[in-house]
Amino acid sequence: MTIKTRAIKFAQTVNAPLTQVYRAFTNATMLRRWLCDAAQADTRKDGRVYAWWSTGYYAAGEFTTLMPEKKIAFTWHGRGEPAATRVQVTLAAKGDRTTIALTHSGLGAGKTWDAAAKPIARGWQVGLENLQHLLETGQDLRLVRRPMLGINAAPLTPEKIAELGAPIKEGICLDGVVEGKGAQAAGLQKNDVIVGLAGKRVSNFPSLLTPLRERRAGDKVQVVFYRGAEKKKVTMELSARDFPTVPATCAELVTALEKMYAAADAELVACFDGVSEIEADHAPAPNEWNAKQVLAHLIIVERENHFWVADLIEDSERLSDNLANPTTVPARVDAIAQTFQTAPALLEELQRNEIETVKMIAALPPEVSARKDTMWQLGYNLLQIAAHTRSHFEQIRAAVASARK
Image (cartoon, rainbow, N blue to C red; front, side, top):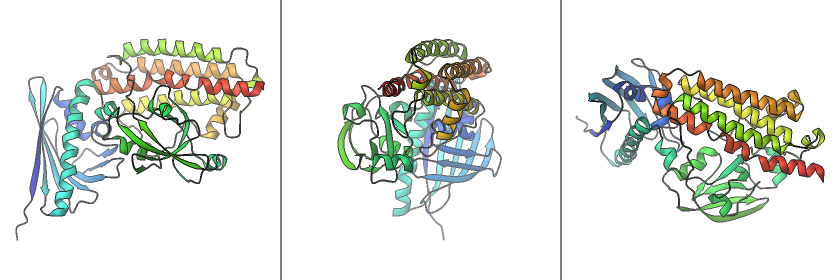
């Protein structure tokens, strides 16, 4: 008996060398940047390949062909699909460009396969478009096109839930809203807990991103949230993202970071002008940070940046698939605040870590500047640090004002 199968074919031309395109299909870090949200890739024949999306879909298989800069083939068995299929990627140089021919074969007939084939085709179409944009400009279209709510999240611990009095176990607790963005315009505020967005349940950060994937800035969505024990609904207009001008080289990024840190630190130091140690130790309320703990948090953010840069360069980026935030772990924040004790010592430690960030970028090898995707991600992430620092200024002032009352 002969079982009929079908194949879906795609073609894409990318203004990038063969080496970079081959790497995009065989390197886990690169797969995460253009195709999926988490990946593993063991680049040897019969080595595993795995891709996962925050929508809940995943596919696993193994490499069957690895011909550097020529051909890649691997099996593919996605969640809910009737059987394993095959993916073959053929690369060819065309002047300074690379042509990609991708064939996804072995798809069967019938309603079940029809339902599986449509998202497979859409996934490769969108992915290959993103790959071209990523290698040519450095930008991930999923991020560039994705709108934002304009919120800052805080850990939703059992203690926090008890404090808020909300009848929930999960969701996204707001630490504040971004000025001029959709959340502020819709009336959301600190300590609100978002549990639904655009008709989808929100339990953690990936579940918040899922309904935003197919939407753009200007779209309106319904937000379901708790304010204390009261459940509320509001219509929010999604906001566009603000993107900094990303330097083209590490040397240019170093100069930009030095200026950024100098300006933000001057403002941060001013927040502590005339503040006593007793005032800096005062917490406005249970489970809220005092001014020193805010500084400890900023120090942890900078230290985490060192890990992130190292992982990015070494192609071993870590993925957090939940709302866990290593920069807000209470024991870690308290340990740093207690170690350095005084506000001046904490400020000095923060500046030391900022200097280390700059020195780290300055020490990166020249080939990093030649990789547009890496440079864009470095610049985009690091040049937003000052905005994050400034978002805590009001928190520091409020804690001090509470102490003075």
